[in-house]
Length: 276
Ligand SMILES: CCCCCCCCCC/C=C/CC(=O)SCCNC(=O)CCNC(=O)[C@H](O)C(C)(C)COP(=O)(O)OP(=O)(O)OC[C@H]1O[C@@H](n2cnc3c(N)ncnc32)[C@H](O)[C@@H]1OP(=O)(O)O
Image 1 (cartoon, rainbow, N blue to C red):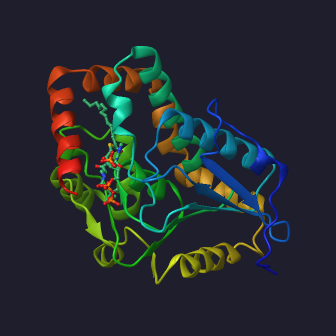
Image 2: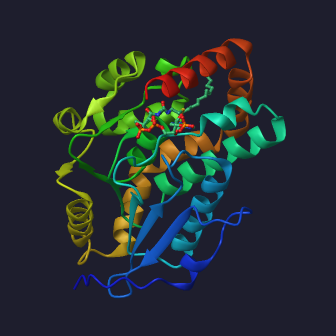
């Protein structure tokens, strides 16, 4: 029985980051064992090092505590996540850049391969890294009138192979190629049509309730049989990054610190500000 009452376990009170802030809140329903993981870094939940570290720790803890399901959502119902924090790219100090990319790799490996069933409750726009988080889950419920996509080429950057694989495994190669090369952002309605999302919701409450309904499908399925099956299906994709992490990190550092990419990112950030 899914009760609305959520119990905030000790882990949700933990401050995972070195900043004196909670950028990720975890609330576990003690009746169902389902954890709601809420990204809360206003204004747009851009993914900086501290947020990624918190998310990574939360995913580890939910793995250890054998959560029965994870719903990933935003504290805002305007933006799910604006993707990677572009300010992390302009800070080209190599130590932090390395930690940042390694933290993103960690989050993706843990979320993509999590033993618990995962749902992205996409209660806001989800460009680039925001879309990656959503694609890493097993099911996607999205608010109407929002946008989602891997728009990296629009920023003059190249989405790494694991970003591409995450999309390809959901919508297939042909559409992934078209989407990524054009940097296409899909509306919620378009995303449903191509299978990039699974359901549309009216508002955040509706999205959470639809996410919970998806997780109910597993109530009578053995967690072992379910998670092993997921591992068989997703294992190769996860392993392809695990085996190439160092090379992927080097490619990121080389690419992002190049003069050409830095110039392009500056122009992109200015255009975001002008768009107001
Ligand atoms: C050879 C191969 C090797 C491969 C090598 C690797 C290459 C590197 C790959 C790196 C991958 C990157 C993936 C990413 O995630 S990059 C980030 C892409 N994100 C975006 O393009 C989103 C941009 N934002 C928006 O479209 C909109 O902000 C929004 C999300 C639709 C929300 O719109 P809204 O109107 O509500 O809000 P504002 O636009 O007014 O934004 C509010 C403030 O937030 C700032 N902002 C927005 N997005 C970001 C961001 N991603 N990072 C940092 N800051 C962001 C925005 O500028 C406003 O700030 P201000 O108030 O100070 O002006």
